[in-house]
Image (cartoon, rainbow, N blue to C red; front, side):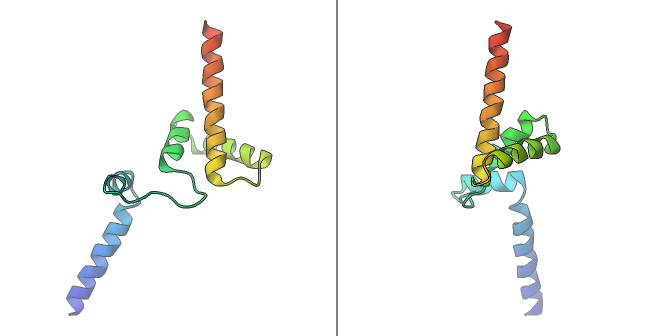
Length: 99
């Protein structure tokens, strides 16, 4: 009985850890589980902003802190969206300058 309980605890712990990985989240999303916490930024927003900052987490945090200072009443998800919007704006203006 104790062995069965230990096996169950180990399986639950393994699944919990796996569900925090990128592959685990995508698998859970494909299975229909939601990756959403109220007010939190989506995985896609986090990944996009991180890739737009060339993987520099300190740059992501700097951009988010700038948006938090401007709009402290907004949620984390809204701060991410504002930072992403600035990425789009800067890329758009850079492409106009090249023309």
